[in-house]
Amino acid sequence: MNAYQAPTPLLTAKEAAVWLATSEAALSQLRYRNEGPAYVQLGRAVRYQVADVQAFIDAAVVRTSR
Figure 1: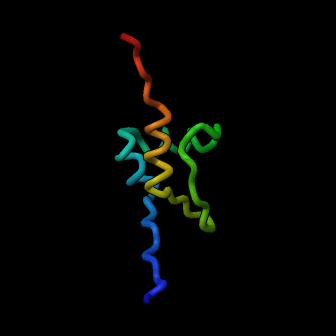
Figure 2: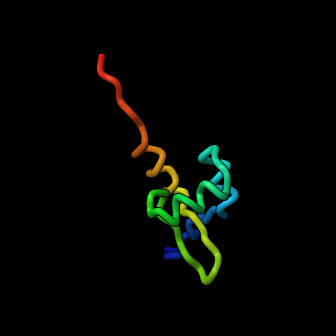
């Protein structure tokens, strides 16, 4: 049995911004204010895990009552 597990793909800030329908600058401001999705800091590079971007979107859903 192979114990290898494929790594989770990481999104660049540009890719995450496209997914969130915003700009890289807006995403940078969210990071600065600690309001955006969780991110990974690899040296100077910022990356986003797909699950973290999706969790950020899911947390922003507003449910209306009927």
